[in-house]
Image 1 (cartoon, helix red, strand yellow):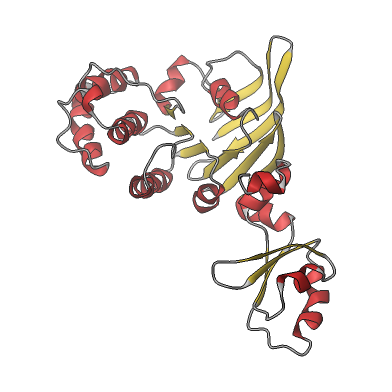
Image 2 (cartoon, rainbow, N blue to C red):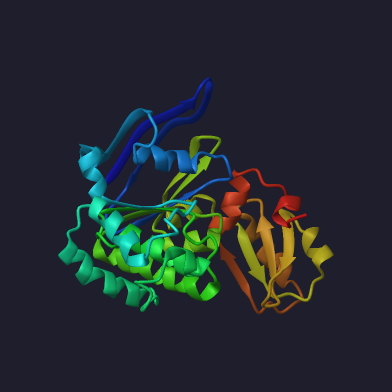
Length: 303
């Protein structure tokens, strides 16, 4: 288990992390989310001892030292491979630094090449590979030594939809193996799909931490889906309704002021009309992220 206590970090006179506390447990996936500049990569670099910091960081009750690095797999946001080396040379060099011997590498590397659909590339130079295949080699380097702690910084960046699904399968398989996994992402649907727990950072401070479903439930069932013949304008004028939008399925999504508003709206919406759908749900992680990040409506729309 990874434990981080009272983590603080400053660059010169500018403090960027303020008393960060969290745990990441074996066999669970923790999503680290926040806007650009919130402090996510600084947290990762502190865990990896790339930076000096104040506070305590431990893996299974022990301070992370140089000899602990063999238990960690790290995929950086900025991928870095040596272009003139072959795939075999690149993997062998970095896997050896993680404590693997030649026999282990020879046994496991072909399995990973097959698993990530890059068979037949061992003697190819890194610079000759497509960007997607280079990313796969970087992932193999991250995971080939079966690390106890896996840190993935924006792992889905640059992956096409097919390979994104392949990467998700690999992450789930590593979870089943019992690894402790932390990853950062800007796509909240990935976080909601993959993660057991979430850690949300804003301006270097923790604003949310806990199991994903518990975090959603904290906000109450403030999303109401209804099938109604009423117009958008009529729905917007109902009491306790903050926002109305049309879903792809053709029903209306109403954002309510609080969970109790649904009980008040039900008799209003059903008065003289047949309602095929009346489904009240907790907000998605994406909606919570936008709320806690202070994202305005025009930012959500990409305008």
